[in-house]
Amino acid sequence: MTINVLFAAHIDRWETYRSPLKSAFSALDLNVHLSPEIAAAEVDYIVYAPNSPLQDFTPFKRAKAVLNLWAGVEAVVDNDTLNIPLARMVDPGMTRSMTEWVVGHVMRYHLGMDRHINNPDHTWEPHTPPLAAERSVCILGLGALGSSVAQTLKSLDFDVSGWSRRPKSISGLTLYHGANGLADALSNAEILILLMPDTPETENTLNAKTLAQLPDGAFIINPGRGPLIDDAALLTALDSGKIAHATLDVFRTEPLPQDHPFWTHPHVTVTPHVAAETRPITASQVIAENVRRGEAGEPFMHLVDRANGY
Ligand SMILES: NC(=O)c1ccc[n+]([C@@H]2O[C@H](COP(=O)([O-])OP(=O)(O)OC[C@H]3O[C@@H](n4cnc5c(N)ncnc54)[C@H](OP(=O)(O)O)[C@@H]3O)[C@@H](O)[C@H]2O)c1
Image (spheres, rainbow, N blue to C red):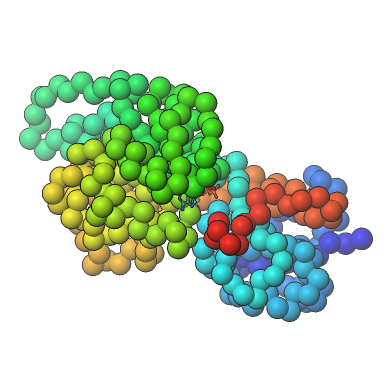
């Protein structure tokens, strides 16, 4: 029997995903008709991205699941017309990409690279950075991405801690959880990385009060989501030197408006939401595996908990 899979991510992604998705379905011996145009009543699975024009799921009466190509689901999780399982993307390629991006920016801060890259006066000032074991790094959010980042930094010998909503156990890491654990997590974070989803609970996790709980001169790296940080509070903390520098990949409004003070602040690096794009080949394998599971009556992978928003 043919399985009808609607490609309902933004149409400009169709050419990128068509061939990897077809290959991934074939590799699992799935007889799939994949197209961006299938009558709603005949669709079995919806490959999706929240920036799709498709926002009303009501006509998809027989669809078994919406399979998101993005890790973040904040723009679809509250859609009242969506009453079937929603899977977010956990893609090994994306996870590697995020891990590499974060490690690069951690190393920039850890080694103090800027002092030699930006040296217009040609000063000869040797400076010995601490070893990684002497540098504390904390990751807020220990999910698919945060736990990979944490383990890679640990393998480089950093003193790694992390914070999540529920208790966790990851060998070699100091772990905190819940609202009561945040202050302890922050208090020893010379370099702080934010890898939480955007939910009503996580908004403004970094605010005037919690920024004050960080060590003086801490560095912040945010590849999670813009609303995790109160922008005004961060700017105040940067101006006072409380926070030495921030690298921000995600923002409340994207693209970041030209008049936003982050663009010109001397202690902010802006990157244009590039930390970890979904990688078509590995992500297509994840989508195909979820279709296989749906057809076999097995539980879907990476289901979104709609009540918790991620
Ligand atoms: N910049 C980019 O290019 C890019 C690319 C991909 C993803 N992202 C962002 O990265 C985020 C994380 O992705 P992921 O795949 O790692 O997500 P995930 O697997 O769902 O992990 C989310 C983590 O955040 C924690 N968390 C959620 N709410 C919390 C709360 N209220 N307090 C404390 N911790 C909380 C979770 O705690 P529990 O473990 O207890 O559930 C979990 O550890 C995505 O949601 C997306 O916003 C950005």
